[in-house]
Length: 66
Image (tube, rainbow, N blue to C red; front, side, top):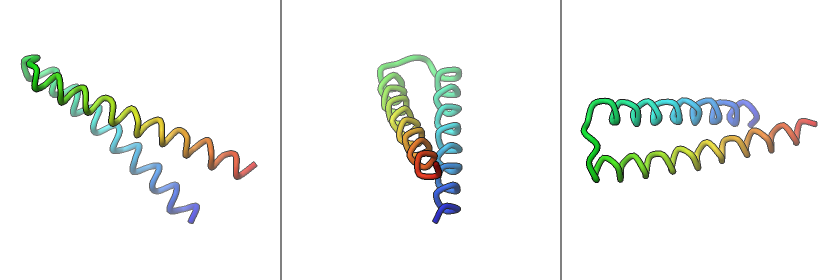
């Protein structure tokens, strides 16, 4: 189970990095319109909440080990 949790954390970290790179590419290549701003807003907050959940999961797993 612990190995599955580590794999989940690693894969979620990769997803966060990929989504942030996608946001950077969108901002660099497209003109800043309302549609792009809305997509950026949704992606930023969804990845922020995913990163926060991932951080909470890591803290909880460290507390269990101690």
